[in-house]
Image (tube, rainbow, N blue to C red):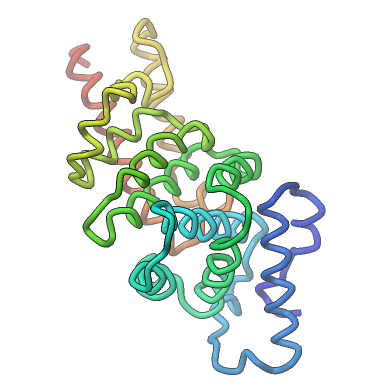
Length: 260
């Protein structure tokens, strides 16, 4: 059946919603083409480590949401298609079968009837690790900024989608600063200001020990082994460094405030 199809039966049986549907359709086409011998020129980068169910779901969510974000202004240019199908997926370290899989999902999602918010909600249901959803949100920002111009439609999506991904709303402000997007920074009046306690998921009234524990738990969720076990591919784990930097900044701010 091929390594890219490993576990797909269990995946479709265990997951519900549009994410499962698009994964099944894309992998079905890939396996059909493989059976016909049409994949001779595609390197099998899954040969040494087959894709897990969670990895397939995470890659599909990224590709589908990228497709919708690229069409945020009502159309998708050849530059954006080329950016996603070649430079962007390659920049994420995706080659061979993984890259081809993402391209297929991107093309399938580009013109379907579902919204980016539909895919975000489906991904949230499939991926319980909030840190991984934060990493994917950062990737969406990278695409929006890839052509050097972030449209008002893209900014609105990036501001709103934190609700569907069920991540800290202040991430919008953090990412706007990280990417140097002035329009998004001006829009922060609609978004909660980044608060170090909310980043750690604890109350300002928490004890020093409770805050240390919260920081350790959040940092553990960003450990490469944990991310890999919960569906983040090796190629994408490096993107978690951005979220670790945000976590460390919040922890350092609290330590300075409390004299820890």
